[in-house]
Image (cartoon, rainbow over all chains, first blue to last red; front, side, top):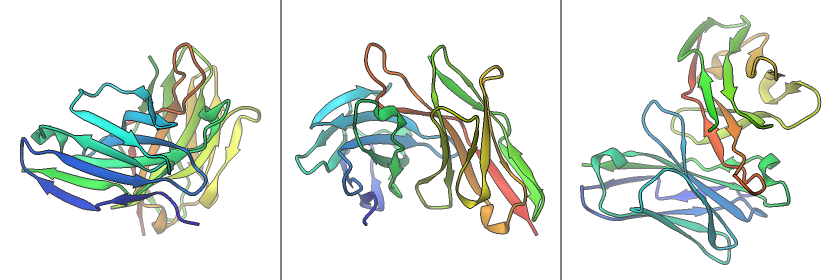
Length: 116
Length: 118
C-alpha cells in the first residue's frame, strides 16, 4: 500500500523563479494538505484541498497557490521565489468525513527547496 | 487562536532511561492532540493521538501520552528509550475551523530533539 509520495525530492531555484511541487496521496485518501517546515521549526499549514477546491488556507501570501486533480493528487505552486521560501515542503493526506479532524494525516517525506 | 508550546528544545537522555517530552496547548474549544516523530531527511510519522475517551493514550514504539485538560498539557513519555528513538518530536493540535466542522488542519509546536546517548 503506497503511502504519500512527493516529487521532486530536492530542488534548487533562484530568486524570482517559479516552482511546482507534486504530491500523490495515500491510497483511499481524498484530502491533501500542504505544510512548510523551515529549518529548526515545526511545520506551518499552507492550505488544504478537498474535492478539487481550496478548503482552508493558512497565513501565506498569494504567491503560494495550489491545485487538486480528480485523482486527488495535488500541486503546490510558488511564484516570485524569495530566499525565505527555502524550506522542506510537506504534503499530508487524510480521509474526509463528517468529522475529519479526527482522521490522522499521513505525511510524505517532503521536497527540500533551496533558493539561491 | 490555538497554539502549541513544546517546553524543551532538546532533551538528552541515556539509553534505557525514561523520558518525558512536554507539550502545552492553548485553545478555547475541545481539541484533538497528536504527537509526530521526524527522523532525519524524512517526513512526519504519527506516534499517537488523543481524540476523546481515556486520557492515557498508547502509541507505537512504546510511547504513551497523557491528556490533562485542566493543565492543557499532552506530555509524551517512554519508560525506556533506545538509540533508535533519537529524532525530532512534534506535538500538534487539530484546529477547529470557525463556523464549520474540523478540517484537520494541524498546528505544530517548535519540536523537541530527543538525543539518546549510549
